[in-house]
Image (tube, rainbow, N blue to C red):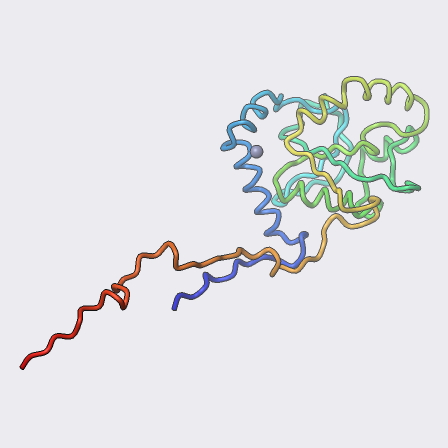
Length: 217
Ligand SMILES: [Zn+2]
């Protein structure tokens, strides 16, 4: 009687650190092992940075959140671009000409909607030190916001998405105030095994070929 292989350890929430570890491995495989992805990756300009980025640091070295100039020579390492649903009535923190200087000093963690916080947690765990979020990296209101949009829409956006290390898409949440992580039943994610005898050669000959008993007189 064979026994089933032991069940894999799968956390019951996608916000668990080991989920990010798995994602990190997938990202590494994608970059260095997948033939077609490798080609796309080689076309990516690794040193290119968007004109504004949010510095997040990494899990080992988390940084104070702040808006940074993409042209700043001290910027080191890749960035992720965040995609999310804005929702029907967006009320979350946005970049304006009024708060831009404050956000250059610090973006308070508590001022961010949950989805953005989860995106930042993911970046840190994956070792990606910067994140690009449209509402915080393109002026949304105030003087100069119109020309900032004009600058971003035709060319900058294409560069931002084609040169990012990763695009984190929070497709599950209707608006940024919802969490990006979800609870789940790990049993549904366990491997399935099907065993059948048809591939096995019988070790003993079938009963019909059993030698006939012989009689000695
Ligand atoms: Zn790939």
